[in-house]
Amino acid sequence: MKLLEDRIRKDGIVRPGGVLKVDSFINHQMDIHLFREMAREWKRLFAAKPINKVLTIEASGIGIAAIVAAELDVPVVFAKKAMSINLDYDNYETRIQSFTHKKIYNVIVSKKFLGPDDHLLIVDDFLANGCALVGLLDLADRAGATVEGIGIAIEKGFQPGGEVIRARGIQLESLAIVDAMDDETGAITFRPQPHQS
Image 1 (tube, rainbow, N blue to C red):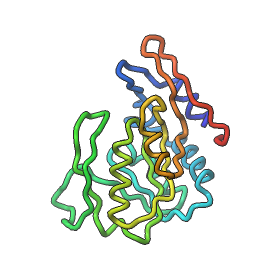
Image 2 (cartoon, rainbow, N blue to C red):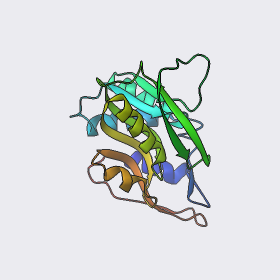
Image 3 (tube, rainbow, N blue to C red):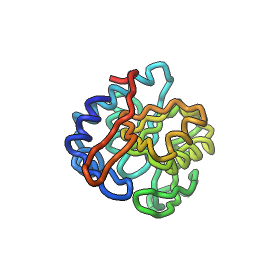
Image 4 (cartoon, rainbow, N blue to C red):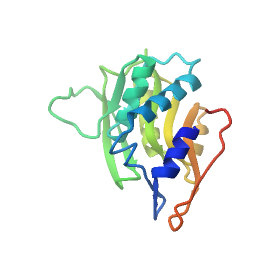
């Protein structure tokens, strides 16, 4: 998606260790106009799918997923990384290792909000090693839900996550795939995606 690639080139910051900082428009301060355009692109790319729910994980994916759910006119459910007193104890649970936070989380979704009648679009801000997505796929599988597709804002194509997910035969639409980054020059190389706008 050219709009997103241009914004990453303009405002993204490349840091050592394969880190791409996009906190000025995606995962701290959020550009809602950009999110709407991303949501419209995913709506187009998944138009043939009978999606009735969007699934994401807290925290950075929630803003994007909410705009996508509004565009699709369906609810959004987010997997929680911590149990709290206002949650029921009848949950699906899995463990996810976070690339960003270098921690392992017990991630939960209430059985009230995920089940066999759900046809899911999973949405998240980043795809690196694929741990979060594998965890969300596990939650969907435990619930008997059908994953119709996955929408990712930014995929790090030089890390294995995209390959891991695509090997499962799931339609994965990353709106920007970064093939290479140089933390000395700040240069970012994107993978061409001719089927996208």
